Amino acid sequence: MFHTFNTDENHIDQWIDQHWDQVLTAISDLVAIPSTEDPATADASTNAPFGAGPRAALTAALELAESLGLQTTDVDGYLGFADLPGSGSKQLGIIGHVDVVPAGPGWTVEPFAVTRRDGYLLGRGVIDDKGPILCALFAVRYWQEQLAATGQQFPHTVRVLFGANEETGMADVAHYRARYADPDFLFTPDAEFPVCYGEKGLYGGTLTSAPLADGRLVQLQGGAATNAVPGVATATVRNATAADLPTAPHITLEQQGEYVVVTAQGKSAHASLPEQGRSAIHLLADYLLEADLCSPAEAAFLILVRTLASTWDGSSLGLACQDPDFGKLTIVGGTIELKDGRISQTLDARLPTTADPAAITRKLTQAAAEAGGAFALTRDIPPFKVDPTGPEVAALIDVYNQVSGESAEPFTMGGATYAREFSRGVSFGPEKPWEPQPDWVGGMHGPDEGVSEPLLKQALKIYIYAIARLQSLPL
Image (cartoon, rainbow, N blue to C red; front, side):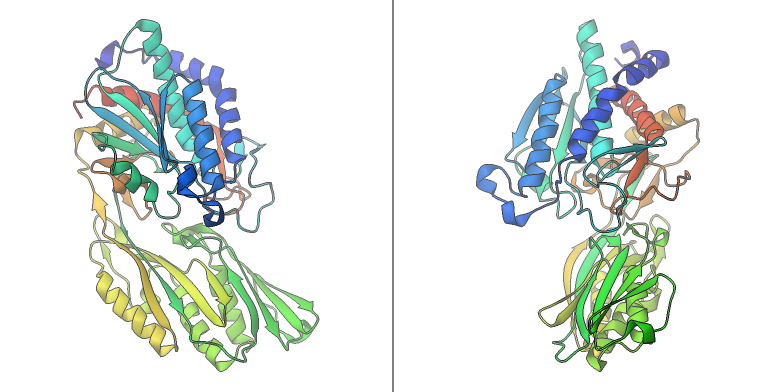
């Protein structure tokens, strides 16, 4: 049982210190793979349903897990898993993902390489989610070594699952669940500490303008992902002179022949935490409108875009609401594009239980029509939560507080993780957004994505304890 396993803190600390360089090498190797979904190279017949990048990252993760002594299975390239077999029929799952969002603009370091600076790691995926899932994998490796050395066996199998499509649809989990039973309990290291027991509803759509003939906009592009506050947005405008245009904060102007390139510099943030960002699309739309750089039809649609992006709680569109478990509705306009004579603006909302998706759709449809365009719903998934007083949540909270010295309580969030895709799951770290970090360290989905090494080390330690503690429960 649990008390017979070696959970001596000094022993765990020494093991982490001795293996930390190996952990860093593994993270660096995985970050070096640009594992963004790529339909152009997707081929399910060759076990690459999401493209060459996710396929390569999944292969690397499974090869690493096998080298660490775990039993691996590739589920047709959709997902892979590594098992530490237990003596009974129950299973503890740990799931993360090896796919990432596109690098996007604004990086000061190479996105697909780990830059180690002043106690931080920078690179796409170091915090979302390659770094965390590899820390969880090495926590399982710790127990694989200890159990092998003592001839013991856990009562429950530990299964580490590597998804390859978390960022763009979670079709990986659907494919897996059609073939395998859910773990009896599962956590994902793809959120914040301490323990998240519920996630808001997910709502998304696209606002599209009417055809824009004879407009002034030649190019319009903003945002790197639909589920992030856009950090950069640009527009190329015909028949304009930069010297005659007004200056504005966060706006730069560049004359290119008869065109002016207008660039807005915002601050990227995840769509679940929009208050931490500054929308470049809002800045750009506002400037184009105030400087009179649009045709009437373009202006009508950009007024709607500006209204959408001007607040993060939906109040500018009359959508604001909240509830005790999940707090406020949030909404961001993630990407904008001028293509084939139409402007398309995506939106991503996170909904509390008091939100009415049908009413939101009606309001957005009406607002789009008034601007001469249309609205298309792309996602509507209800909120979910597990019992925050259950034994598994209590065990994880206890472990987190034991290691961190805090007195934290479980919480809910607006982020979407794999936890909501399973029958019994929570998210469990490793982010701590309340801890200050240098301005040059970016967040997940933004440029210069970064994480502190001490945080990852602490997460590894927490996961080592958590695995043992959950083994003491019947699940």
